[in-house]
Length: 315
Image (cartoon, rainbow, N blue to C red; front, side):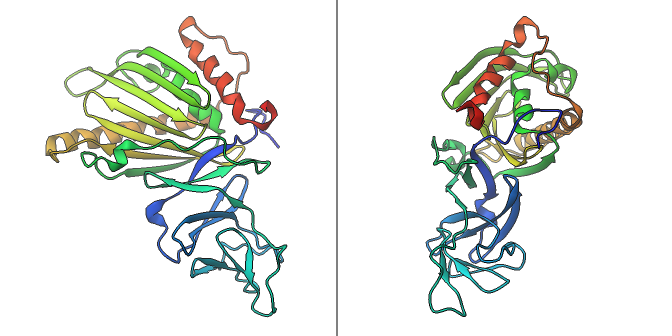
């Protein structure tokens, strides 16, 4: 049932379900996404697999006591074995596997150290490819700093913040409202280019926040000014009222300069503090379908129209 605060189901798309370095050989991850329990592991070819967690035999939760051996998932209840395609390949006490017994699996890819699964409520195949993350392969950028948040709101409400320039001044104490130079929606992609002023110990510093995203759950925010840095933002629906947000922050610092690293730490602290300021607003606000906006806030409506394509009723 949808919340009275926002009338949206879960969107479909590619969503982060794990980080690549979380999936060691023979390891099984148990998570809750898409309104159900899921399990993630690597098959015998080393490929990441994401599947619904309930055994097709008698419904045991494979993430509670299940195990991985030779790339196959073993049920803790009766020992039934499933391969990376979700097919039952062995029943310890039967001569043959059960051809009708299958787990629901989600198409899965790895991009830039992130494991992403494709969710569609009607199990339709993927409609677009996941964006590349050039910073991940660039040696001038450092390793990710990872921040996870579980937030009691829907994904659309969280994403709308990126198109609400005025809140940066009033919620986050940025020196002034930024200047939005370009907002573009093209199919499944979105671009927001903006000039900003960042607070610093020496006063306001001119900079930029440029965002490129594809689909409802994935975007890269690139910062310039105090430092050059990128924030890979991943949003995943836990259910239609709860979202997991993962921020992966990476700094461009090819010379491993200590001063740049100190500024980066302060910047990361600032970004973390800002999402902490956003969370109570998200968790207590109500969606207004016909908002009273100023002329400069048109991008909010453009974003809402673009986002509607990720709900099945918009097909």
